[in-house]
Image (tube, rainbow, N blue to C red):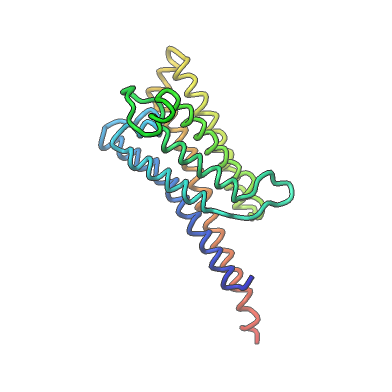
Length: 237
């Protein structure tokens, strides 16, 4: 592949990864600021912001993330891979659409969306939570497996850290949700009072955003390195 074409491709990946990183870092921050300064409280979970005036931001950001992930091709399948970057990104992107378009439990118990009408208001949360599980799982695989393949040691540690943070967030979300639904007394009160589900989700999304921002920086480093290698023979002539 000619150097210029390779550089353009890497820069394209850089823009996609940077956009994903910024969207991931920005979504919880916008919802936190909106919750604290607008409606004066945080919702129990990020998904609950669907049922507020911040619905457009929640849905729009997740759909944008979904589009970028579906368009992301990455590297082809390598030895030992069960799935290549393209398919993993597509699965993650489709699941992001699922999280955005299938609302969780409605506080009014009234049908408000086309998807609720299609599958039923009681079934929509099942699609929502399944999509969220798949989404976070795909993001963890990117960090723990895909990004670490060619990463330098320092960046590899960041990717592994982000991946395990996403896994820990998933576990935290599951435990906190179970306590909230099935628990009682002080544990349930703590989950509700401290919005633990929201914070576990936010931490997982921030880890996702950080990993993709770091990967974008790695792309730029590759472009600079390739440019130096091309220019070196000319300089020495």
